[in-house]
Length: 331
Image (cartoon, rainbow, N blue to C red):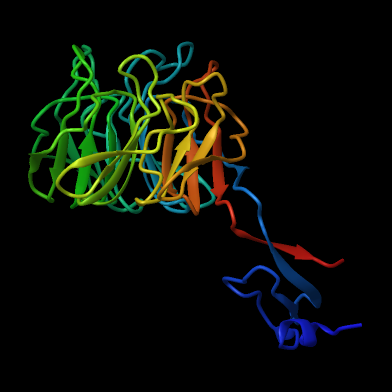
């Protein structure tokens, strides 16, 4: 019978802590827990429940990572003390719990956001009361929101992503029609760039930089599966979503060319699809199906929170990507 060393070319390692990035098939002995462990590849990604946001909301925006995120704005459900009103609430996620922090200056729903953590973010566009999409932009410094220069075209339910100093916003609606507008933020001003090929609202996106992005889904109407890739100067149509839909979890969930399409207004509102740079593949569903939720992170590690699939939800879920490594214990 062949030994592990004969098969793998090395002996089983004895380590005090588990490897931070084990490869599939790797086996080790943890001397601290005195347990033999190994790793095996997950066939597809999956969602796990984490602590919910403090205030039920939908049409909110999200930014940051799976362990350091912000959720801001939105609309509380009817029947709550602030039900039906637009929200300025901001909540910060530290990987374990949500904490209420200082509010936006302007209450609004259907806004967009950008940022890579919970200490720096950008909130822009959206719909305050009375209903009318705005161009308002606010900058978060980890403590307070400050109004900065406006968008060129006020819009709501648009796609967005990037950082607080280099962001994109594309698509959405001006209330009278679906928009194809694409704008870039350089830390001071917004600049109009080349439009999407297909105008749509309830679109979502993944932004790696202002010269690399992906826009997918949305409504024109009807629901769209269209996916477009941005190279810094123009948009190119690529392969469609498997299920055309809009009203995804709202926040940049991806760094193009990878992306994650979460939930939305398909018959299955828990549907999750992963973009690998060429094609979309269906993954495990959300535990709580919803539309217009908030989201943050990347395809390897994402977060979805809040949303609407009545009743409105405060649920939050964390994502582990397809092909990720899970640890098993031989006990």
